[in-house]
Length: 398
Figure 1 (cartoon, rainbow, N blue to C red):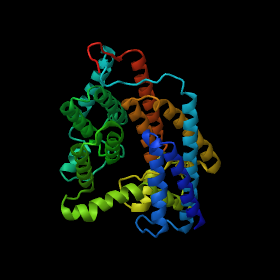
Figure 2 (cartoon, helix red, strand yellow):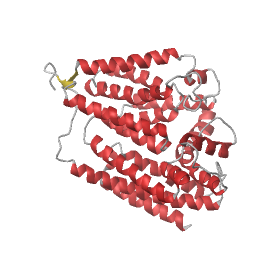
Figure 3 (cartoon, rainbow, N blue to C red):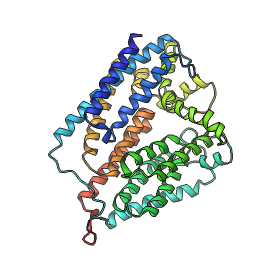
Figure 4 (cartoon, one colour):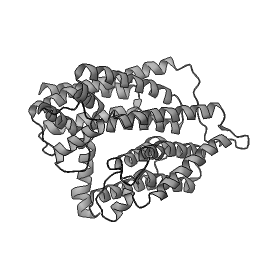
């Protein structure tokens, strides 16, 4: 099919731009990763006759290829605009956190104390409802973002767990890198809170972020720990026991299929639903994902992620989806150019998380609130540095 060939050609152009500009050094690399797992690998899987999740016909498959190469060119536009914005901001003074010469002021300590106190109280107040503990007992996993029974204010708390606590952790880690045991202890506590709600994806990409940006020396123990924990959590979520046979025959195959096929194969299925007369316009973003899941699996509860360009097209049509997609891309590019000027792990996490949200779960109302919260936290970190809330210590010298 010529459409698939154009998609491959478009991805090659994106790859040349990505590596020539060394964009893999920044959190915005996630957009490139999204092009791989949402369009390139699922399209290749479909092109060569992959049968899993195939509830769609050839017409929807061709539309998927077309939407794929258009979305890849949108990502090219994002990187071009990001580079232009970065050049315009180049003369501004960046904030670099020196891990040897910084300490915390009382204002920052109050912020940390409130955030950690709230997180701990919420965790223990709902100790009997967390999916992670239900998984350990073999119960069926239902995430609270899908079914919030037993949880109050879960959305706000999930943002605190996924944004605020990692920001605090990375700020502390950047300053106290040599305190390895203490950092590892905090790391484990943070991972527990990230997976408490049953969301495997945020844990996996948190590990990837640590490996890419936080670990200067790729310690084999830490990397091995992250890999083993990822396998264990995934196995528990799927309700399978961990053994050599399941590891080889099911877990690894299932994980690779989940990463490189499932994330994008929802799009041709959603296009098939659209061709069959399903009206996506009145549905919320979450309802769209649940409807696609029901169409593919015919069981529930569950939801299937869809990339924001596809969701906008299904809900609003071609013209409006193009305008909204460009608006999102320009906004993310401007945000990225500001974040990536600062050699600060906490700010890098804010940027990484923003891309994670838009690439992995689309443009839901909840995700727009998440992005606004991330923007606020990033602005708070920049202000904290400028105001001296995270300030240089006369007692420590590099």
